[in-house]
Image (cartoon, rainbow, N blue to C red):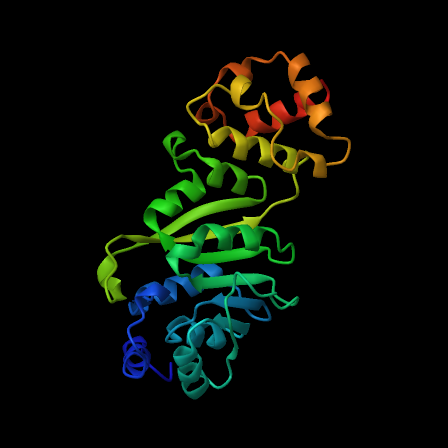
Length: 273
Protein backbone atom coordinates (compact mmCIF):
# COMPACT_ATOMS: atom_id res chain seq x y z
CA UNK A 1 0.00 0.00 0.00
CA UNK A 2 1.25 3.46 -0.88
CA UNK A 3 -0.30 4.81 2.33
CA UNK A 4 -1.02 3.24 5.68
CA UNK A 5 -4.58 3.59 6.98
CA UNK A 6 -3.38 5.88 9.78
CA UNK A 7 -1.54 8.10 7.30
CA UNK A 8 -4.61 8.53 5.08
CA UNK A 9 -6.83 9.31 8.06
CA UNK A 10 -4.37 11.81 9.54
CA UNK A 11 -4.01 13.52 6.15
CA UNK A 12 -7.78 13.98 5.87
CA UNK A 13 -8.44 14.96 9.49
CA UNK A 14 -5.73 17.58 9.26
CA UNK A 15 -7.63 19.33 6.47
CA UNK A 16 -11.30 19.06 7.37
CA UNK A 17 -13.65 20.46 9.97
CA UNK A 18 -15.20 18.08 12.50
CA UNK A 19 -18.70 17.84 11.03
CA UNK A 20 -20.43 15.33 13.29
CA UNK A 21 -23.57 15.27 11.13
CA UNK A 22 -21.66 13.21 8.56
CA UNK A 23 -21.24 10.33 11.01
CA UNK A 24 -17.58 9.92 10.15
CA UNK A 25 -15.76 7.17 12.04
CA UNK A 26 -12.68 6.17 10.09
CA UNK A 27 -11.70 2.49 10.15
CA UNK A 28 -7.93 2.30 10.75
CA UNK A 29 -7.43 -1.37 11.65
CA UNK A 30 -5.44 -2.88 8.78
CA UNK A 31 -6.59 -6.43 9.59
CA UNK A 32 -10.26 -5.50 9.36
CA UNK A 33 -9.69 -3.62 6.10
CA UNK A 34 -7.94 -6.69 4.67
CA UNK A 35 -10.76 -8.93 5.93
CA UNK A 36 -13.37 -6.85 4.08
CA UNK A 37 -11.44 -7.27 0.83
CA UNK A 38 -11.06 -11.00 1.43
CA UNK A 39 -14.81 -11.42 2.05
CA UNK A 40 -15.63 -9.45 -1.11
CA UNK A 41 -13.10 -11.30 -3.27
CA UNK A 42 -12.72 -12.05 -6.10
CA UNK A 43 -13.01 -8.44 -7.21
CA UNK A 44 -10.95 -8.42 -10.40
CA UNK A 45 -12.99 -6.74 -13.15
CA UNK A 46 -15.92 -6.11 -10.78
CA UNK A 47 -17.63 -2.73 -11.04
CA UNK A 48 -17.55 -1.69 -7.39
CA UNK A 49 -19.43 1.16 -5.75
CA UNK A 50 -18.01 2.46 -2.48
CA UNK A 51 -20.32 4.64 -0.37
CA UNK A 52 -18.60 7.23 1.81
CA UNK A 53 -14.91 6.46 1.11
CA UNK A 54 -13.80 9.18 3.54
CA UNK A 55 -10.04 8.89 3.99
CA UNK A 56 -9.65 6.24 1.27
CA UNK A 57 -8.31 3.40 3.43
CA UNK A 58 -10.71 0.88 1.90
CA UNK A 59 -10.60 2.56 -1.53
CA UNK A 60 -6.86 1.97 -1.79
CA UNK A 61 -7.31 -1.76 -1.18
CA UNK A 62 -10.21 -1.98 -3.64
CA UNK A 63 -8.03 -0.43 -6.35
CA UNK A 64 -5.22 -2.86 -5.51
CA UNK A 65 -7.65 -5.78 -5.96
CA UNK A 66 -8.03 -4.87 -9.68
CA UNK A 67 -11.64 -3.80 -9.19
CA UNK A 68 -12.98 -0.85 -11.15
CA UNK A 69 -14.09 1.46 -8.37
CA UNK A 70 -16.52 4.37 -8.26
CA UNK A 71 -16.85 6.17 -4.94
CA UNK A 72 -19.65 8.51 -3.85
CA UNK A 73 -18.64 11.02 -1.18
CA UNK A 74 -20.78 13.81 0.27
CA UNK A 75 -17.94 15.73 1.96
CA UNK A 76 -16.09 18.17 -0.32
CA UNK A 77 -12.97 18.05 1.84
CA UNK A 78 -12.80 14.28 1.54
CA UNK A 79 -13.25 14.54 -2.24
CA UNK A 80 -10.26 16.88 -2.47
CA UNK A 81 -8.22 14.57 -0.25
CA UNK A 82 -9.07 11.52 -2.37
CA UNK A 83 -8.20 13.31 -5.60
CA UNK A 84 -4.78 14.12 -4.18
CA UNK A 85 -3.94 10.79 -2.51
CA UNK A 86 -5.75 8.35 -4.83
CA UNK A 87 -5.82 9.93 -8.30
CA UNK A 88 -6.91 6.65 -9.93
CA UNK A 89 -10.13 6.58 -7.90
CA UNK A 90 -13.28 7.81 -9.65
CA UNK A 91 -15.03 10.03 -7.11
CA UNK A 92 -18.51 11.47 -7.46
CA UNK A 93 -19.46 14.17 -4.98
CA UNK A 94 -23.04 14.00 -3.76
CA UNK A 95 -25.64 12.34 -1.57
CA UNK A 96 -25.77 8.64 -2.46
CA UNK A 97 -29.45 8.43 -1.49
CA UNK A 98 -30.52 11.33 -3.69
CA UNK A 99 -28.53 10.69 -6.86
CA UNK A 100 -28.70 8.13 -9.64
CA UNK A 101 -25.93 5.54 -9.44
CA UNK A 102 -23.77 4.57 -12.43
CA UNK A 103 -25.48 1.82 -14.43
CA UNK A 104 -22.27 -0.22 -14.61
CA UNK A 105 -22.18 -1.05 -10.86
CA UNK A 106 -22.56 -4.72 -9.88
CA UNK A 107 -20.97 -4.78 -6.40
CA UNK A 108 -21.08 -2.58 -3.30
CA UNK A 109 -18.20 -2.62 -0.80
CA UNK A 110 -18.23 0.06 1.87
CA UNK A 111 -17.90 1.17 5.47
CA UNK A 112 -21.17 3.08 5.33
CA UNK A 113 -22.44 5.96 7.46
CA UNK A 114 -24.61 4.10 9.96
CA UNK A 115 -27.41 6.66 9.97
CA UNK A 116 -28.31 5.80 6.35
CA UNK A 117 -28.19 2.01 6.74
CA UNK A 118 -31.90 1.26 6.20
CA UNK A 119 -32.55 3.55 3.19
CA UNK A 120 -29.26 2.44 1.64
CA UNK A 121 -30.24 -1.24 1.83
CA UNK A 122 -33.54 -0.34 0.18
CA UNK A 123 -31.81 1.53 -2.64
CA UNK A 124 -29.32 -1.31 -3.19
CA UNK A 125 -32.20 -3.82 -3.30
CA UNK A 126 -34.06 -1.81 -5.93
CA UNK A 127 -30.93 -1.67 -8.12
CA UNK A 128 -31.13 -5.10 -9.83
CA UNK A 129 -27.64 -4.92 -11.38
CA UNK A 130 -26.09 -5.12 -7.89
CA UNK A 131 -25.63 -8.77 -6.97
CA UNK A 132 -23.02 -8.64 -4.18
CA UNK A 133 -22.72 -6.40 -1.12
CA UNK A 134 -20.09 -6.30 1.64
CA UNK A 135 -20.67 -3.50 4.13
CA UNK A 136 -19.81 -2.48 7.65
CA UNK A 137 -22.87 -1.69 9.78
CA UNK A 138 -23.74 -1.28 13.43
CA UNK A 139 -23.87 -4.60 15.29
CA UNK A 140 -27.53 -4.26 16.29
CA UNK A 141 -28.49 -3.39 12.71
CA UNK A 142 -26.55 -6.43 11.44
CA UNK A 143 -28.51 -8.72 13.74
CA UNK A 144 -31.82 -7.35 12.50
CA UNK A 145 -30.66 -7.43 8.89
CA UNK A 146 -29.54 -11.06 9.01
CA UNK A 147 -32.23 -12.27 11.47
CA UNK A 148 -29.76 -14.32 13.47
CA UNK A 149 -32.47 -15.46 15.90
CA UNK A 150 -36.30 -15.39 15.95
CA UNK A 151 -36.01 -12.46 18.37
CA UNK A 152 -34.41 -10.43 15.56
CA UNK A 153 -37.41 -10.80 13.26
CA UNK A 154 -38.69 -7.49 11.99
CA UNK A 155 -39.75 -5.72 8.84
CA UNK A 156 -36.14 -5.06 7.76
CA UNK A 157 -34.76 -8.57 7.96
CA UNK A 158 -37.84 -10.39 6.69
CA UNK A 159 -38.12 -8.22 3.57
CA UNK A 160 -34.38 -8.50 2.92
CA UNK A 161 -34.82 -12.30 2.82
CA UNK A 162 -37.02 -11.87 -0.26
CA UNK A 163 -34.02 -10.68 -2.28
CA UNK A 164 -30.81 -11.62 -0.49
CA UNK A 165 -28.89 -14.37 1.23
CA UNK A 166 -27.19 -12.72 4.19
CA UNK A 167 -24.18 -13.63 6.31
CA UNK A 168 -22.57 -11.97 9.32
CA UNK A 169 -18.78 -11.86 9.34
CA UNK A 170 -16.15 -10.08 11.45
CA UNK A 171 -17.23 -8.24 14.59
CA UNK A 172 -15.42 -4.91 14.92
CA UNK A 173 -14.71 -3.18 18.24
CA UNK A 174 -14.92 0.61 18.72
CA UNK A 175 -11.13 0.97 19.11
CA UNK A 176 -10.72 0.03 15.43
CA UNK A 177 -12.09 3.46 14.46
CA UNK A 178 -11.01 7.10 14.73
CA UNK A 179 -12.88 8.61 16.54
CA UNK A 180 -14.27 5.65 18.45
CA UNK A 181 -18.04 5.07 18.09
CA UNK A 182 -20.07 4.02 21.11
CA UNK A 183 -21.21 0.78 19.48
CA UNK A 184 -19.69 -2.39 18.07
CA UNK A 185 -19.81 -2.93 14.32
CA UNK A 186 -20.10 -5.91 12.03
CA UNK A 187 -19.10 -6.79 8.47
CA UNK A 188 -22.13 -8.17 6.62
CA UNK A 189 -22.31 -9.90 3.25
CA UNK A 190 -25.38 -10.00 0.99
CA UNK A 191 -25.71 -12.06 -2.19
CA UNK A 192 -28.75 -11.60 -4.40
CA UNK A 193 -30.97 -14.64 -4.88
CA UNK A 194 -33.43 -15.54 -7.62
CA UNK A 195 -36.69 -13.56 -7.40
CA UNK A 196 -39.31 -15.22 -5.21
CA UNK A 197 -42.87 -15.59 -6.41
CA UNK A 198 -45.26 -12.97 -4.98
CA UNK A 199 -42.32 -11.14 -3.41
CA UNK A 200 -43.90 -7.70 -3.71
CA UNK A 201 -47.22 -8.83 -2.22
CA UNK A 202 -45.31 -10.50 0.58
CA UNK A 203 -43.23 -7.35 1.16
CA UNK A 204 -46.35 -5.21 1.56
CA UNK A 205 -47.87 -7.68 4.02
CA UNK A 206 -44.70 -7.76 6.12
CA UNK A 207 -44.41 -3.97 6.30
CA UNK A 208 -48.06 -3.58 7.32
CA UNK A 209 -47.97 -6.35 9.91
CA UNK A 210 -44.78 -5.28 11.69
CA UNK A 211 -46.09 -1.72 11.96
CA UNK A 212 -48.46 -3.22 14.57
CA UNK A 213 -46.38 -6.19 15.61
CA UNK A 214 -48.29 -6.94 18.82
CA UNK A 215 -51.53 -7.58 16.95
CA UNK A 216 -52.55 -10.80 15.25
CA UNK A 217 -52.30 -10.86 11.47
CA UNK A 218 -56.07 -11.22 11.05
CA UNK A 219 -56.43 -7.74 12.54
CA UNK A 220 -53.48 -5.99 10.91
CA UNK A 221 -54.21 -7.39 7.44
CA UNK A 222 -57.89 -6.51 7.52
CA UNK A 223 -57.08 -3.24 5.74
CA UNK A 224 -55.32 -3.27 2.33
CA UNK A 225 -51.55 -2.69 2.54
CA UNK A 226 -50.18 0.58 1.22
CA UNK A 227 -49.53 0.37 -2.53
CA UNK A 228 -51.60 -2.77 -3.12
CA UNK A 229 -53.22 -1.17 -6.19
CA UNK A 230 -49.81 -1.10 -7.92
CA UNK A 231 -49.85 -4.90 -8.24
CA UNK A 232 -51.55 -6.53 -11.21
CA UNK A 233 -55.05 -7.86 -10.44
CA UNK A 234 -55.05 -6.23 -7.02
CA UNK A 235 -56.84 -3.27 -5.49
CA UNK A 236 -58.63 -2.33 -2.29
CA UNK A 237 -61.79 -4.21 -3.26
CA UNK A 238 -59.91 -7.36 -4.31
CA UNK A 239 -57.91 -7.31 -1.09
CA UNK A 240 -60.97 -7.07 1.15
CA UNK A 241 -62.75 -9.82 -0.76
CA UNK A 242 -59.83 -12.23 -0.51
CA UNK A 243 -58.87 -11.53 3.11
CA UNK A 244 -62.49 -11.98 4.20
CA UNK A 245 -62.62 -15.42 2.53
CA UNK A 246 -59.24 -16.65 3.76
CA UNK A 247 -59.19 -19.08 6.65
CA UNK A 248 -55.63 -19.93 7.63
CA UNK A 249 -54.00 -20.71 11.02
CA UNK A 250 -51.18 -18.23 10.31
CA UNK A 251 -53.70 -15.38 10.56
CA UNK A 252 -54.04 -16.14 14.27
CA UNK A 253 -50.33 -15.50 14.84
CA UNK A 254 -48.32 -12.32 15.34
CA UNK A 255 -45.76 -11.23 12.72
CA UNK A 256 -42.67 -12.23 14.72
CA UNK A 257 -44.02 -15.82 14.85
CA UNK A 258 -43.62 -16.28 11.07
CA UNK A 259 -40.50 -17.18 9.14
CA UNK A 260 -40.06 -16.16 5.51
CA UNK A 261 -41.59 -19.38 4.14
CA UNK A 262 -44.69 -18.74 6.24
CA UNK A 263 -45.04 -15.28 4.72
CA UNK A 264 -44.69 -16.65 1.20
CA UNK A 265 -47.26 -19.37 1.93
CA UNK A 266 -49.70 -16.82 3.32
CA UNK A 267 -49.26 -14.61 0.23
CA UNK A 268 -49.90 -17.57 -2.03
CA UNK A 269 -53.07 -18.59 -0.15
CA UNK A 270 -54.32 -15.01 -0.17
CA UNK A 271 -53.77 -14.67 -3.91
CA UNK A 272 -55.81 -17.80 -4.60
CA UNK A 273 -58.54 -17.13 -2.02
